[in-house]
Amino acid sequence: MMKNLTPMSEDFNQWYTDIIQEAELADYSPVKGTMVIRPYGYAIWENIQKYLDNRFKETGHKNAYFPLFIPKSFIEKEAEHVEGFSPELATVTHAGGKELDEPLIVRPTSETIINHMFSKWITSHRDLPMLINQWANVVRWEMRTRLFLRTSEFLWQEGHTAHATKEEANDEAIKMLNIYEEFVQNVAAVSVTKGLKSEIEKFAGAEKTYSIEAMMLDKKALQAGTSHELGQNFSKAFDIQYSDEKNKLQHPYQTSWGVSTRLIGMIIMAHGDDKGLKLPPNLAPIQVVIVPIIPKKDDKQLVMKKVEEINEILEKHRIEIDDRDEVSPGFKFNEWELKGVPVRIEVGPRDIKNNKVIVSRRDIDDSKQEVSFDNLSIEIDDLLTDIQNNMFKKSKDHMIRNTTHVESKDELIEKLIKTEGFVTCYWSENEKDEMEIKELTSATIRCYPLDNKEMKKSINHKDKEGFLTIFSKAY
Image (cartoon, rainbow, N blue to C red; front, top):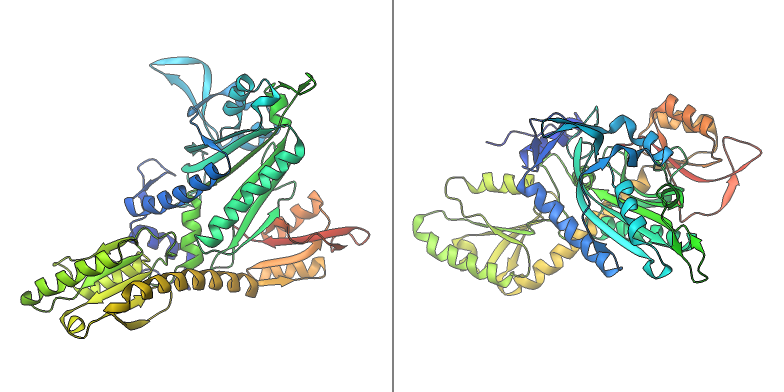
């Protein structure tokens, strides 16, 4: 029996956890800090994978697979990288009943082992660009975990590329950021801001980290994807060299980029309500659920025949027929609302007699409409498109409405303490100032938006110009 969800307004974190368990997306594993992704949650991940994998291949990337275990000495080759990851590393010291000659790290990310292989594979300028992607699991030993958002083991993709010039590498990093933006906005229906991370917030070992930042319903930020321009840091550390067209040895310029199962957490927190999930049609494992209404046993054959007809008419969509006898239609409605299915179609004897069905959309409360059976295919197509667009519009409006601009450092601190949401200002990068804001407010620089290049007088250094900057508390 489904339990009532904790209302979002009462306890947002508990509401989030309730949805994951009640909608059967994931469950707690017996290993502390890890999760079991259930079939419905995994179906969402598969749809994320399908879209992105296709886009990666369209842009010339090829999938490969690298080992889960990485020699400890590899992790230590790039100083910044090991410093950034050391608190989260899981280490294997024994295997096969013996102590290992060298400890193995369970991969937190694969830069090091992939670059070891690149040093073997890249010898000539003809080998560039090298464009590799891996779908894998990674382990980061987190102390405070939350299903999908932060677990000790999670699923992701990680792209790793090598290029002849810095410009090519930077273009690649931006191109992949744009693909993430395209997915999150057009498929997941979540509005994002693209930007550059501050030095403190960038990836360990990167020259530049680009990210897409989304705003959740509780007005906190969530980093939905990152793309890193690595310069030559890893190619020098791993001695990756190639002979250029003049036969001179050069180190390539590199990138890495990734998104993870935290995107599922984003989708829950950007769209859901007190009834449960709201899934955008482009991503939903089930786009349309058909619920037969059978008041009497004698009606069953008539109703199910019509249900099969509807199923055939809508065959290009992802359809579920809920013909369970043991639960009531009301129970089914609640369950499919909880699971966030975008469209529900009810069909009973009276509807068949009138040549129509009852259609409800998940994104708008209590929206029921009668649709003629003859127009059903076109109406459902239009409805799914409208739901997708409406969910994105709501997300975008939410971000705009909860973003405020400030003109002084005092005002920035006051806003970040008193209100949730994004706070923008013109800021001159300074580690001491940035840490002060973080300590006073728990907020961080989310990014310097890429679509605003103008500089104005900064609020933290009166004699310096600064870039537009977004501060926010974040997941």
